[in-house]
Length: 331
Image (cartoon, rainbow, N blue to C red; front, side, top):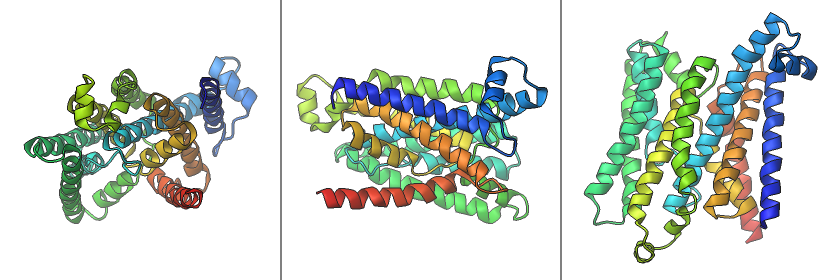
């Protein structure tokens, strides 16, 4: 793809994101027309009810959906580049399992929402730290393979702990809260939470942006990368740290949202190729558009809001199967 076509693609995705954000702000049980929406956003002749709906309810949620979709897609692209495998998702190192266990522990202990989110964030980081320490202990083996196997083992252990918490939780109050949180959703996101989410995602995204030109080095064997003056292990550590922070921030605020970090980088790769400096922004924009639309569908499809993670699975799994069958026919 030429530079001109790539720039046009990014511009089209950015316009599509703005359109989906406008749809998310307009649609719902209280419909808002585009003139009224523009009046509220610009502060001209809007009612107090309209401002409440737009500024306090829908805008924080729509922006959170865009940020989390971009974060999960960027994390998925980083993990897939690091492991040289397009079937890797952001939870490969156990971050989602650790965050789920941390949040469930907070709900089990009847803590506030802030503590639940903090425990979810800490649980995700702790899980990946354990995986990395196992990888360091087995450094004589294939480092990438050891990380994957350690992630599977740690994730299974954390899932067992989560199952134990579910068994011990109060079935009338705690268990439904744990189950609903694990299915993901953005109904609890407010402007206050957005003030913490946005800087966290921006700080975690910055290393990926700065290192985007070097990530392609990981496609080479380690000895060739070292011969070129690059340290692949240090680069992997930086990628793991950034991608883990992105995933932990997302899961802490929105619960476990599956498939976004797996499918969006895959689609981006079909559009712009595997070159990471182009793949990263394309995947991030695709993820933002997808999650904003999915969140809109979760609010509009029925009288009861559907869990966001449930919808992403219902949409993502069949689409991924379609991509697999399509790639088989083209091969």
